[in-house]
Image (cartoon, rainbow, N blue to C red; front, side, top):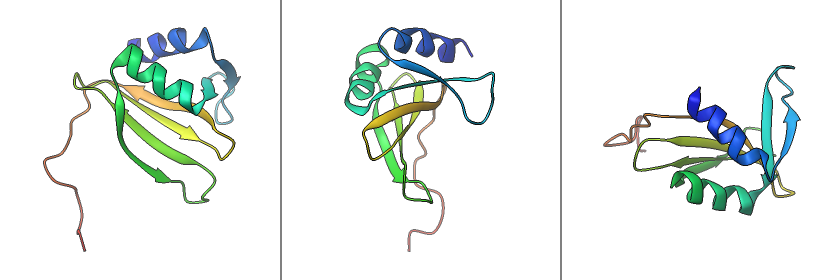
Length: 102
């Protein structure tokens, strides 16, 4: 919770705050994708660790992770707008991927 609040404060200076569609009390931090990537690297030393398309194909999800274990999940739309979906601490990279590689 402390890291999430820190990210909200850091991003809010240059980002637009929107009410989340899921919860009327939650705030979501959004900005241009390139700015988000630079801010995550600069403030938290986080780099992209993986990405994929949402089932509807209209959003790209990217996971950014630091060596210290902080992490941020961004959702980006085709227009280049990115929003922080979730963030936290204690990320652990698995030695090998889960599931069948075939």
